[in-house]
Image 1 (tube, rainbow, N blue to C red):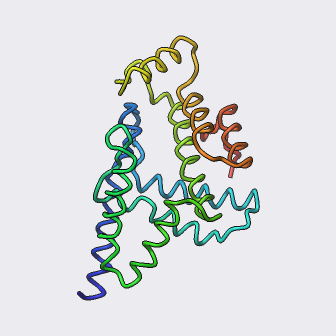
Image 2 (cartoon, rainbow, N blue to C red):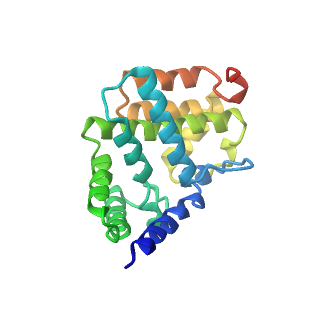
Length: 216
């Protein structure tokens, strides 16, 4: 196959991510003029990585991190943005790895790119762990922004199971915000280091939207 065709094939496949809306926001019936696509999430993670590296001076190869983040969702071009309510973790990993291999095998650098994808997925190296934390924190920050904009009505949520229904009832009863619950849950679930935890806590305790930005 011509190199030119390889370039076009890869670009067109990845371009699908611009049209795939993040499943989590659909599940929560986020209502706003523009709900985030997977491609927009990737961009957000990359920008967050740049800021975290800048302010906390991590000893990492930031260009490797940016590359990892750029490709970490490409499997979703084939399998979609599946959640663990839809499929088991093991089955999702299997399907995603097969999809990534299928996408990359046509590129001359495909094996090296696939190795970076797998490194991210294992999040054992310092770059992979940093990228993984950025991936999770970006989702938390987007949740906070949607909450501040009033995009979610928790009473409209169709719960996946009894445990989730009980949690929603508790939040409605206590007045705890959707984003506070979401971010506190992720603090317990994901291996945030002290810096990522500090940013998460700041976002919980402060408004972070455009209105609070310093003038640039």
